[in-house]
Image (cartoon, rainbow, N blue to C red):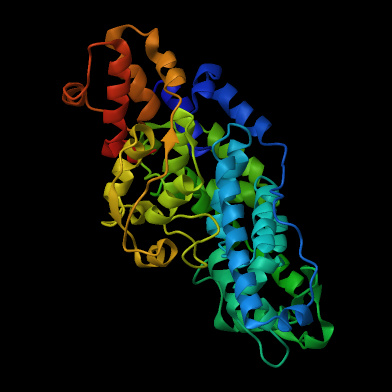
Length: 462
């Protein structure tokens, strides 16, 4: 039987980044938790740490090699600043649902910005529309400088079309592979010719570079523009099916229930792609809280990191303690591996990251350092093959202990494990875990029990 507390924690993991002590004390039913998640995610505050740069192409072209190098270094630093600022938002109770949706859209509409202001702009577009209308989100992301530069949209000109954006738009962002033809891609690319950016980083259509000829797309002929193509794609029900399938895999279960996805996709399409309405339907459904959907997803690195920070109210002496584990585990915000985003699922658990994941909580909570062998793409960032995370973090153990201190001693295991672990633990597992705990005081028992539970493979699941 799935208890109400387990349902609440399940919701907080899937619609957010795991329960905080405050939320456990606040929510007594999944209905109150759900109402709070949506209510607290109504307001949107943009990230605003990078100023808009008002420079022309000529300004950049006249820079010396040293000045260009310095500008690129500063751009990389600013992108990391935006990434760090965004990650910190995931540790708060406020806007948990909006930020979780933003992480999903970041993986779905994946982009790797090269400039700080573009990174900030892209992150804010996703965060603003995270629970809004998918059509508006798609249109604005498509016209963002970050995405246009990432997918070479500005190289797409009349007489020399570049198909990158048109292909990824159909294959990854909307219709899915096999639901369009090569001719659709070629002619759609012609429709997007002329899309460009004018200083300071505003979308513009350069008419002299736009192909205004007749194009045949999805069996229709006309002088279609880029906006026309996006609207045609949105009118295709396959778009709703493709997106809903990805949302189901991300928020519910990697194993897709085709009937449920079909029903959800119909609702999504009929609502004109209302994201909030779709998510309310998912999180309100009784099947969402069934045993088969609880504790069966491998936590992404971001979920794992945020869950630990939130549960133990961790503070750090520097930002490296946040970015280091992201890089090692293979998910740093604003640095997806490619336009397909992070593959997720079992891909999170490979030989080079498994031990680091299992030891992450020990490192952050108990100050233990572990040598790790960095992946090739991380080596350049860290400037060495073998590195030790020497950043210092501190947990608020008082608030954690206080949550369980009033429980009878024979109930502490159940209380602590239900807070930290989503998969159902076998009864035989309790005695094995307890054999490694310290029981001389209730406080030491809670601390040592938490340490044992956090190192279990089950903690990697949500």
